[in-house]
Length: 199
Picture (cartoon, rainbow, N blue to C red):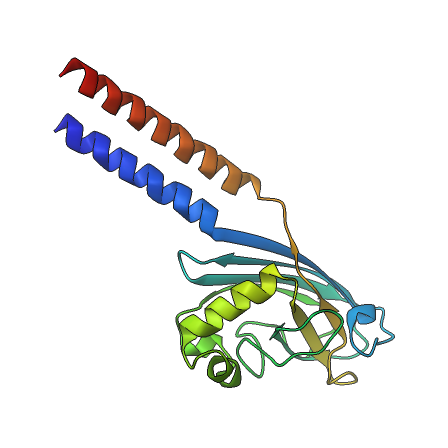
């Protein structure tokens, strides 16, 4: 029984470490100057995008203010080197849950990347015709800095503010989970070694 518990603890530790390793967090600073062509706007915003490849989730957090006019859409475009323009990767016309018809607001939504509803159909088609292909393309585009989050408005239908991703610093909860998982893994290893040596 003890050996079974030790193996279970070891397996859980491996899963926790793998989960932490699979999550990538990006930060984006949104401005009119990042648009192509640049837009004269006092609008600004911040976004955090967390992609967990193991869980197939895309978490989008965004806060924005001072837009010239009301929002009409927001989504992630991919894949092109800055400052180029690319097609929409995520759902169109806008993220589900994004505040429309406002000049300031925020959103915190998590999307399932295995669902077709998370993606623009054209992006899926261009990347092998599957949600897995779309997911892989977005992950690669984000890692290469070749994606951007855009907020569109009535006076700037092509986009009023946008931001390009930079790899963020791991959050404290993520770091703590990783440390706990490593400690659990080390403890399980020591317990298994002791058991092996005493047999």
